[in-house]
Image 1: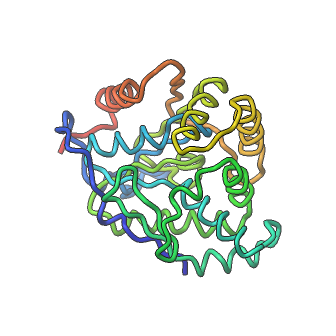
Image 2: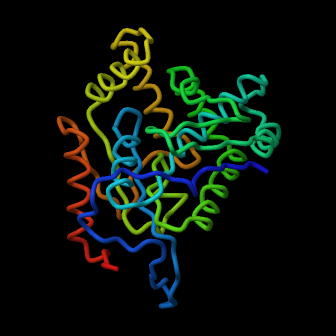
Image 3: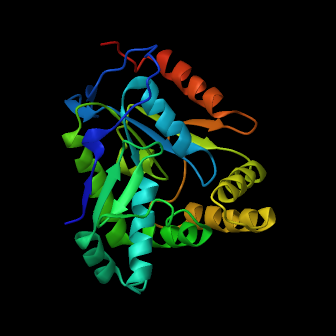
Length: 265
């Protein structure tokens, strides 16, 4: 089976907590009035370059929650499939691949490192080619089912709440998440951010090329049949154009603090 290790060793930022959040469980009535217990999840979805990874890590640190980068998991599958030359239209072989993978997050680092079979692939999955391949592989039914099942099971072993970021956290994986956000920004700003990230990693690419590829990725993610990128019905849509990371985190913190869904410990 596909295994992901490391969530139990999540390391948080040292800034003091300003608000108190319930550590793990909350109760919600279903449509029939029955009480249901849910893991305390904050779901943050958004397109490439929206800042959701950095925001999610920092938010998790502020409130003492674990952090889950689901996009990195799909990128790992895409990288492994590329290396093994598995066609992305072969759901059976991709499902077998998912079952064989051994992934591990090392949360002692900031950002966390992702290891696949003890190989650090953190940098190898962060390039435009894997951007598109991960979008392709995430649209495969068998891969999506394996990943969704794993991501849900991961909450069972946590001793705290979880900030989960991706593209379908609030709509598919954690539909009962206590708080849901759709983080976005203008295409121009997102492309500029991604271009700067590439330059910081020593990779050169014209910003116009980055923008065109990001536009293609947006179209692919938003129009796929299975789990397309879209805001959950009860999500807060936050346009981060012109905002800094701290501004976005503060906005989310204020939103949750003033929400009737928040219960102090």
